Amino acid sequence: MKTVNDMFNYAVKNNLKLLSEFNADFWKEYTTNAGSYDSLFRRMYYSFKFFLQSEEEDISAVTNNFINEVNHHLMINKKRYEELYRVYVLADEKNSLTDNYNVTETMSREVGSENTNIYGGREDSQQYSKGAQSNDTTEQVTTFDSDSFNNDKKYTNSDGAREDNSVNVKGEQTDSLTSTETETYTHTKVGNIGVQTVTDMLVKHDNFWSGYMFYEKIFEDICAELLIV
Image (cartoon, rainbow, N blue to C red):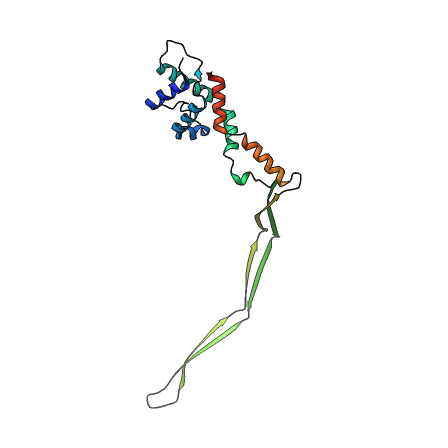
């Protein structure tokens, strides 16, 4: 039966990725560096054999069948590996070694005010009165050899008394002014509240990551499902 080493050599010669080209974020690091990861997989399971093969199948059929089965394995475990990958790529600032308390409170509200002024209907009136008035105009003339003037013509204009009224009527009026603004408040509390000491947290961190190797975990799963000794 064909071994992992046999399949690895065939994959290298034919420019194949031994553990498939499955399309997922958690598998992109593998597909980008497949040569290195395939070499690691061969070292871990050098003499193991793909269980789903017959004596009559050549190395080409065995290798391609194995690649397809790895793809199937990744497909049906996609959600589980995606969740594990979230831990694997968790940013350092999101995983403090010493803080065990991190709370952010955010409050946002709208603050508004409204001023309303109501004016009832009103009538504005103005009155102008003018009494009787008489205006006289007199024209004077002089002879060419005299400096004195003599009345020549007189005009008289007489205006009777009159009264002028002006009335402006304005209906009811409402003036309204509304203003709105948003207040935002953010309060963050970060630190160690004493439930665990910093040393306790460092020990737990070390224990967790010592046994957590994302791609080796997937390799172990592939081996358990597809390989035999």
